[in-house]
Amino acid sequence: MRSWLPFEWIAAMRFLGEGRMQTIFIVIGASIGVGVIVFMAAVLTGMQNNIIRRSLLSQPHIVVGPPEEVARPLRGGAEATASVVQKRTQRLLSIDQWQKVQREVKQIPGVRIVSPTVVGPAFALRGDANKSVSINGIEPDEYTRIVPLNEKIVAGTWRLASTDCLIGTELAKDMGLAIGDKLRLTTPLGASLTLDITGIFDLGSRGVNERNVYVLLRTAQDLINLPGGVSAIDVTVDDIWQAEVVAQQIAARVGLQADSWIKTNNQFFVALNAQTISNVALRIAVGFSVALGIASVLVVSVVQRSREIGILRAMGASRGQVMRIFLIQGGVVGLVGSFIGSGLGATALTLWVATLKNPDGTPLFLVSFDPALVAWAALIATATGLAAAVTPARRAAKLDPVVAIRA
Image (tube, rainbow, N blue to C red; front, side, top):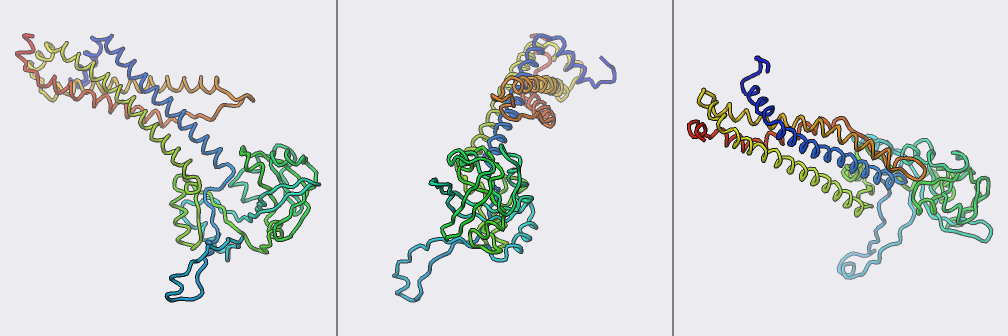
């Protein structure tokens, strides 16, 4: 042992070396615990990100639209108070001065992309077949930054001209449509237009693939009878978990209705939160078991080395120095176990990705090993080792040197 090391470190390393088998077993236990934490954290995070990515693939994080129309009695006074007002049927309205609203929304912190859209009902007609669909008028360059529609084309090409449309795989199958076929869209207002099918997409959602028909923004404006207007403004944010906060800021600033994915998918959001809590609880449980293992071994070490501790105290070692000896042991075991465990976790992740694949050979879902996780694991494991060593260290420091030497 190098002479420049402090006395506490020399004694701690010697104790660890003399109880080699104990040290090996406790390091193995800490390594397995850290490995489980690293592996499960990466897998559960990857699974959660995959669920979110698939669920939000076909929708924006926030949809800004005109406020709901509210029916009000024409007369005031007691008659109005006693009257029953029937809720008004909602009409498809355009956002007033939507270009100004779009600019204001872009200035709100946390907003990443803003894209105007026109969404309205229609009937898709082909021969004797007809199906209720949703017309989605978009500006392709902006909209594809929110929903990667151009990457989900499974047949045809990504092209939208004034007489072109993109349809989903389910709609194409139900109506027997293929690339180059004609599709006639008729709206409840009586507008009608025949479009060329240039692409068929698959967004991973049966409902979206069966219902959505994408056209240019100006084409949808003509069909829905919103000349120069838009029915909604789609927004994506930097942090999806802050979508509801940003939506409230948008509503307060522009005076319009802003619905986040958290609000419209509340049950889904609750399930994700439950998964996150379960992930944290699992890490705490494993960390607690590792701490108990370290503490139990160090308690045994104190009992076994009571004579050595008594000699050290008789030679002038203070109670603080004796405490630090065992705290150093706990910290070293936790630190070494964290690095070995991180290696085990990374190896398990590599085997997971290489073994579990989809039928087409692609990974079951993306799992990435975050290097920062190693640093956090090292910090937490070292802190756990120190915390676990507190009780044995205090017990060792309280030993009476005369009694310890006679034991």
